[in-house]
Length: 272
Length: 293
Image (cartoon, rainbow over all chains, first blue to last red; front, top):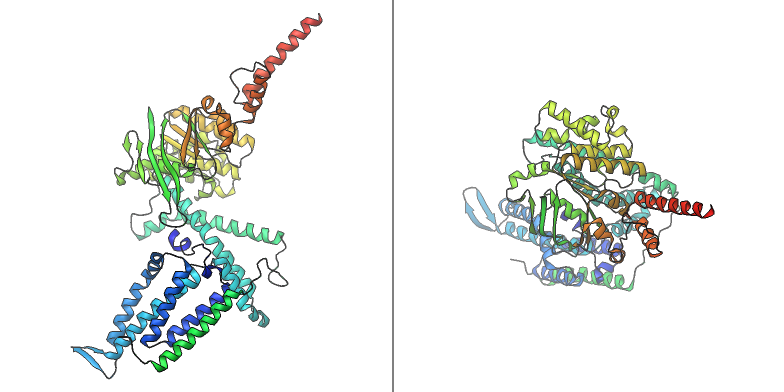
């Protein structure tokens, strides 16, 4: 559980870490779009090279990225099988009983594998591993702030997100602590049937809820004491400013989109 | 005889990440029956990790934990019985209360041990006495008690298992002076009455000086001092270097000794020092009276 929640963000000071969170969000959207535009071998090679370069720049060990890819393995296998078996087309490659495998199915499967891997890598490099959750919500709030003109409570949503993110580690730690305390009193969480296991969790869930509500109340009081009244007229401590490096990356992103489109049109070599 | 023994235990958190930290580094310690041992150390010195090893919540990367001469990790199936024999009261244990009544909450441990109703009732009332839980709280909801009262209930909940080793992490933190005094006296009473080895983690030198028979000092995950309070508090300058210090009263007593005031041996508790000061004062007054005659 610790690894899942806390092991995501890798503190560091690389170029990627220091990019403006808004820039990273926009670039990620662009990167996602471009992986769906790409459908030729050249385009994918270019995207993979870009991803490799970004990974290098982020200064995060390769094994962390590989670990991040593991969870999508099953999705990849599943969609590959579905794609190969269920896509029909003109070019029949293999036939056995009710199984028909077409060339188009294989193309689709390869495309899905490439796109999914690039998506996971891209979002890892640009967001989860290199951006702290707080600066991420900051960036999101600033990007979405035009919506508050049409009375969307953008600030309130992002405050809720910030608080939720801020308290995930606290709650995980607390759950751990309470579980340990009850284990020390002989509670047994790992044996028995479903119902007895659920019952065994009561001594953990009750104190956890009690303290979560208490915490919420205390936090609300503390915020009120400091005159928090929502987003209206509220300034910020860290004002986000684009730097020269952000401009460089935006330009790079634009060039990448252009390059992928050009390669798609002029180098129609397919990846298989 | 040593009830529980740590042999050269080591533990490192988050191996292979930027957060890697060696919390406990080659510590060997014994805790004897009927003795109260205090563990002191700065925040992050490895105290909590160390005591979580005592009942198998944390498995040492290397080294052994011997309970009554047996390695607690030798047979994982016996871990539950180890937890009944080594009672652990965590920091701020009042947050672990959950049951409908105080009585039921204290009985949670003994119930898990599979004891029969009479024995459970006997243990609950015995533990309640040691921990200072009053009779009329027993049928209330634990959530209706004050913080200090909840703390006592939580301590009673662990004592009710009659552990032969009782470990408490900051049992008196955040309590008022009277509350500290009474909860710590209750713990000492438990120690003396049952012959359990009791281990207390605390930041308060004063509490250590008053209640502990032995003191262990941890710094950076290593054991750097162990002995009676006289032996440990005699190493004043080292303790100050570790950012710990000695009881304020001991400091003052040392100053007085330097000035030639014959304050005696008992310089670790306010009671001891004030007794000898009173003695000295009355002696001097007596002399003065004679001189005036």
